[in-house]
Amino acid sequence: MNIKRIIVGLAVTSLTHAALANNIMETCIDCHGSDGVGRENTIPNLRGQPKAYLEAQVLAFKSGNRTSSFMEPIVHDVADDQLILAVDFYASIPVDTPETLQWRGDKWPADMPLGERIAYSGKWNSNVPACVSCHGPNGVGVAPSFPMLLGQNKDYLVNQLNAWKNDQRPPGLLGTMVTISKALSEEEIEAVAEYFSSQGGSL
Image 1 (cartoon, rainbow, N blue to C red):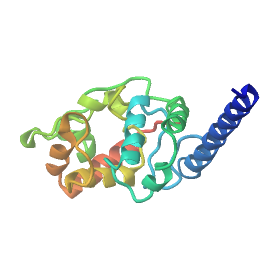
Image 2: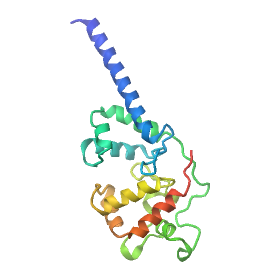
Image 3: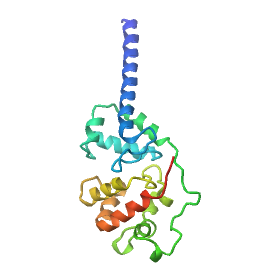
Image 4: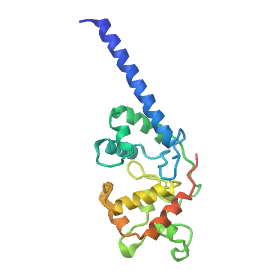
C-alpha cells in the first residue's frame, strides 16, 4: 500500500471539498448576499431562518421534490455536506426582532388592516388559522420547521403562496399551506405578504 499516495489523495480531496464550499458560497452570495438578504424582491432572505428548514428546502431542490429552474442546476452537483455548510452560514446570521412579541396583535381584529388581520386572526370561516399560530409571534419563525416571515421579501412570499395555491410546491409540514393558500384571495395574499415584509427583521 502506498501511504504517501493515500495521504496526497486525501489532501487533494480536502482541497477539492474546500474549493466546492467556496464556490457554492460565492454562488449563494451572488443572490442571497453575505448578509442573507435577497438581492431582488423575488429572492428569499435566508438570514436567521431555522437551520433544519433551510436544509430541507435546499435538499428538496437537489432531489427535485421542490422545483425551481434557477435553484436546481445550482445545487444538483454539489455534495450535501457543502450545501449544509451554506445552510449553517445563513442560519447563524442574527436577526433583530421586536422587543415585545405578539401572538394576537395589539388591535381589535375588525380594526386591523387586512394583512395584519390574517397574520394574527386568520380567516376562520375558511379554515385559515392565524399565520403566527405556526410561524411564531410576529412571524419570527419556529425551529425546526416553520420559517421566519418577519421581514421576508414581499414578492417572494406572494410567489410561494401562489405556488401552493396552484399545486406547484410540495405541501410541506402537515400539508397545511396548500389548503391555506387556496382559501386566500389574490387581494388577501398580497395583503398578508405586504404585512410581514414591512415588519422589520433587520440585521
